[in-house]
Image (cartoon, rainbow, N blue to C red; front, side):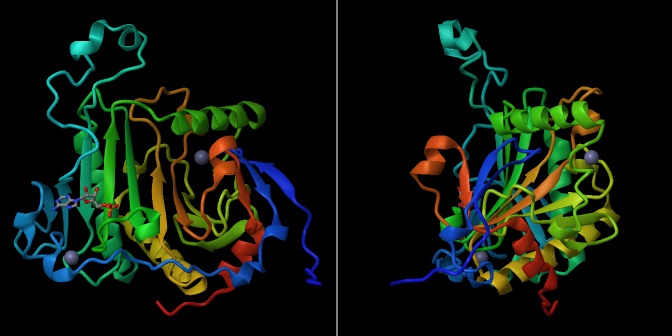
Length: 344
Ligand code: AMP
Ligand code: ZN
Ligand code: ZN
């Protein structure tokens, strides 16, 4: 008969930032340190036919800008060849042919205007984001900022989601290191829920919930301007958040110095994740505030970067309930990652 080692009791936690319930169920897992990815890290993609490689620019959708602005570029921001939204709509504010329909009048239909951009993070196919120097990762972060500043000029864009898919099971179709920016004519419900949840915490405590995260048990690494934690109610095993130390509502408040600092921490965390979890596919998302926020929302709006290694699938329970089952308590994940030494 199989015997199972004693484990911590299951516990349900609600995250004060995302407002999501998570079931911590260690009995469903092997030991936290035994977590390893089994998925191949990258989709098959041959560098000789890769449109994102230097020299193959003609195979790409139009360029928005490159850094530096000469043939020997280090990063490029380009239009997505298969964009989810159209940058060429005649009526970006939603006055399409359907505007007389009942659902449109009620605000349930909005024209699909938006920008879907790709950030090619390096000219070289075999180089991953975590291989770059902190200052070069900082350049990628500053490219996001520069593009956000351009897109902010469009009144009909309400939210800009920056994200990275790395590895096939994290949704990547291209193996050349890249990230994406999707600029939306709506504020996604998860963003509104997050702001409402942070507002509730602020009303109850007088403090911003992310300024207040100070638990030593959840800390992984810190720098002058940022700290990384395994969040208190992590939805996924080894989920990591990188949070600016100073209160800041929008990612595009990042300056050059802080971008290099963040680049260093992001590099360290990605290296640690790769070493500990066997190069897992992963996603990162920058959770910033909607472009138009009111002065009263600013005291509790604080941006952060979320990293999710793809180690467990999402099943019917998660899809049905919106609650996640996480077999690894965040303090166990934080301790393992905090104590891990990686060659940088
Ligand atoms: P991912 O699927 O996460 O790897 O992101 C890669 C993105 O690049 C996808 O959204 C594709 O639509 C886009 N893409 C693929 N080929 C090209 C290309 N030649 N020029 C511009 N975008 C492309
Ligand atoms: Zn390539
Ligand atoms: Zn704050």
